[in-house]
Length: 168
Image (cartoon, one colour):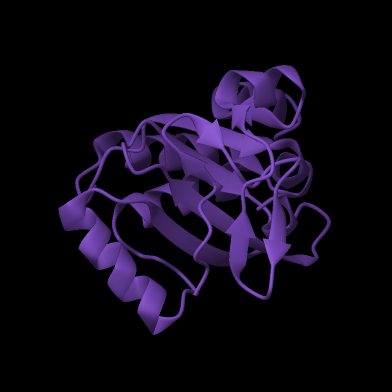
């Protein structure tokens, strides 16, 4: 189980300056606000990522993208609000926009992906007590290679971040 948190309120612990101690605990070395992380190019708002990605899409990809947007906006199965949507620049370089939307739909509906049973139970409790939500997904990246992605929603539901494990 990952006991460290990417974010607490608007502070990012796992970005530059964060480090792992032992196997699964993260110690806070420095604190990044979301705005600082965006300014430093560590994070980007998801709408900027999507706009940039749309320029290179084929017609079929655009149709699938619009369907993914529609699914996210319907929020029929949403168990919690996602807040602001951000992605680390490392994840943005490997992930396509359609998959990003589909991950968000899965995350907000309570499909936690490839998490262990303990993290699954922690997420279910978090839906009730308002703590951080954590999902893990295996996807095919832009270049066809398999990538592992984390999706983390802050405890206060102010933001959801898509990131690679090495960004944590």
